[in-house]
Length: 89
Image 1 (tube, rainbow, N blue to C red):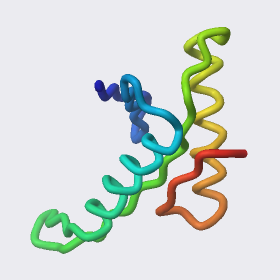
Image 2: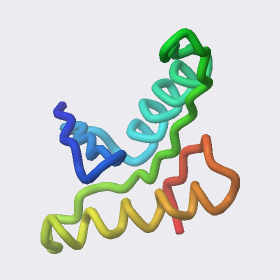
Image 3: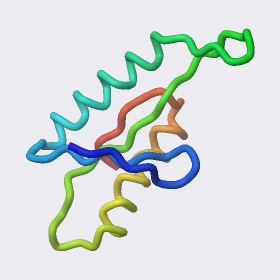
């Protein structure tokens, strides 16, 4: 499993030998842990949330096309209220 920074605030997480449901479970576990934590910046407590767009890599598509599928789902998560995991749409 590997994590890559993809742009300013976006990351790509590749979970080897994991189906869409396993990916969504992993994303939900990370999402909940981040939501329950508190970041302190210059003495101020900040609550942070995170949204995920999950997909299974399609070997018939380019890396960019696969990322576009996940990115579309990420934006669906953001547009539907943020702080959630989306694995379809």
